[in-house]
Amino acid sequence: MSFVTGLLLIDAPASALNNLGNLPGSMTENVVGVKHIPTREGNYPYVSAQAFRYWLRTTLEQGNWGWKAAPVFRESKIAYTDANPILYWDDDLFGYMRAPSKKTEAANARESSGLVAEATPTADTVTRVSPFRVSTLVSIAPVRLVEDFGTMSRQEGDPVPHGHQFYRAALQGLLSLDLHAAGTFTYVQRTGFQNLDEE
Image (cartoon, rainbow, N blue to C red; front, top):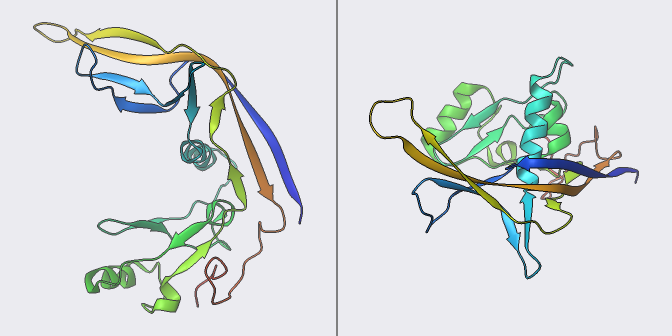
C-alpha cells in the first residue's frame, strides 16, 4: 500500500474556527463559545475532522478546477450521496454510506429521483471507506480563551448585547491519502467492500 501523509498546521491569530454554540451560565443569553479540550494546563481549542472535511469539500466544489461533487438525496431523518465513486470525485475520496430507509414512501421517492437504479436491499446499501483521512486539528499548546462583547444597535430601542469566545493558537492535524484505494472500487457482498450497486 502507498500513502501520502502529512502534518497540517493552521495559524489562528485571533480566531474561533469551530464554534460550540451558546454557553450556558454566561452574563448574556447569546454568548457563542468555541470547541476546546479543558485540561489542568489550560484549554486546547480544536476543529473536528468533520468540520475540516466539510471546509475542504466546500472549497473544492467552489473552485474552478472542474470538481465533480455528488448529488445528495435527503429523506426525513437521513441523507446520503449518489454513492457513485466512478462519476463523482468526492464519493471516491471522502467515502460514503448509502443505507436508505426501507419505508415505502422513501423507496418510491428514491425510484423517482433516479439516484438508485432498483429498490432492492443489495442495490440500496453500499459503503466506501474514505481513502482521504484527516484527524482532529488541536492546538499545539494550551491557550486562554478570550470572551469579547458586542452589540447589535442598528435598530430602534436598546442595543442587543452578544458575546463570543476566540483564541490565538496554532492548530495541528494529520492527513493521509491511500493511493491504492483512491480510484479502486470493489463489488463484494461484505460490509465496507460493497462499494458499487448493480447499476
